[in-house]
Image 1 (cartoon, one colour):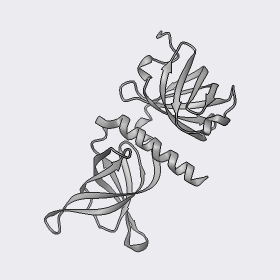
Image 2 (cartoon, helix red, strand yellow):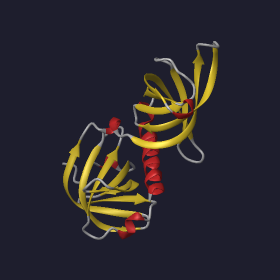
Image 3 (cartoon, helix red, strand yellow):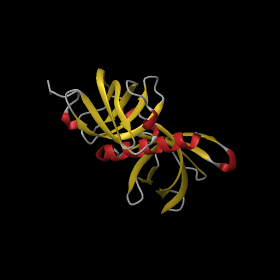
Image 4 (cartoon, one colour):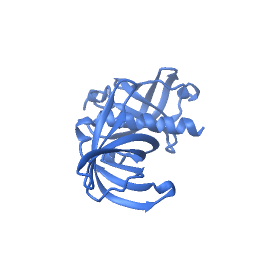
Length: 210
């Protein structure tokens, strides 16, 4: 027994808050863990309208402790924070790597061009992404097994370079765009940062669709 509703090691973990029916509400970061409640820091105003006693689900991401799903009731909520109490179900699953987010984000990919013998670059549009995979479109025709380096913008000041190998190629679409599936090679050492990025993009897509 830890004496807390979840281990203290989850403090600082990125999380997403959903309704019990899995409708996305907002993202946040666990700021405190006690014997009877969890406190989450949030930036979104969405939780101001969540009433006392409303049941929610939390997906918690932590590279050392693992992925965890918690269900509980809203105890307090407002701009900047929310606390969850009456945690009645804790489900630990190996779903972290399958957490996939749709997006429509431009990036630049760098690769060894087998046709020119030079290191080249091309524009790509990332359509969806998980910790271990990416789907993107490009006008460049890549061979299977091609290794690409591409960047994601974690925030206004920080970016990250990731590497993937092309494992599947789709049909040609409009404007000569080809679709590709790549297996990400080097995300494991930066899982928390990539998870935070994916949650950010998920929130942006949901806000834009409203």
